[in-house]
Length: 318
Image (tube, rainbow, N blue to C red; front, side, top):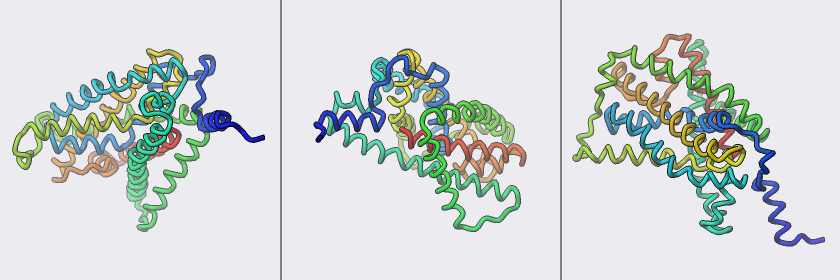
């Protein structure tokens, strides 16, 4: 018997996970949601963002802009997730009220195209981490291994995503606390490897911009853009959270505080690298290998490497 158009649509929504989640089926409290959303946004692209901001503004401006810019944006930007929590629906459902059914399909494709280059960055940085780890052990790596490691990152991340939200949750329960601890250690390494005043009073050369306000405006825009790329997680995680308050603030704290902290970590490392080597290098693996002792570099590189797999997994899932 031929299915009606409505029945076909219901079948598609069941397949792609857009059927509303009932309250008794919700699995996340506040802290689990914070950990998952933190794990999504504290991949090594945060180091890259911090290094970029350090080319525009001084460290104190960066410190304020990274946190307040992201949190201000998220407090407003996250308001629609209340709908996701209340009705157990994800972003692709409630966006239909704005764009219509076909328009939401177009926006889905646009958001995927915007976000997937970030996952390419994750794969690239994972490969760099693995190659630097091999170098620490004195193992030469042929050039083709970079592609092999990139594909490995994508493959493992996709496999974790295929296992569903349970595997992603446990991955982040393990990784995120370790990564936050690593971030604290990295900041200490950055501040102790160079004189404190080098970082605290740091100001980049912005003479090419003419007006000093232009790089500051660019930095705020970069903070807003960084937050906007996290749109995919706005509905997928909150719809699994038990209360509206937890769903909303988990996004603000998980992405606004944890993510911004790692942006600042990246800036500290980039400034320290410029002082030590003369170049503002944004590759976190090279930063860690240069500025820390071998044992710390080894453990740090391992965590940084596998953080990229976790982000790849969550990104593929959403």
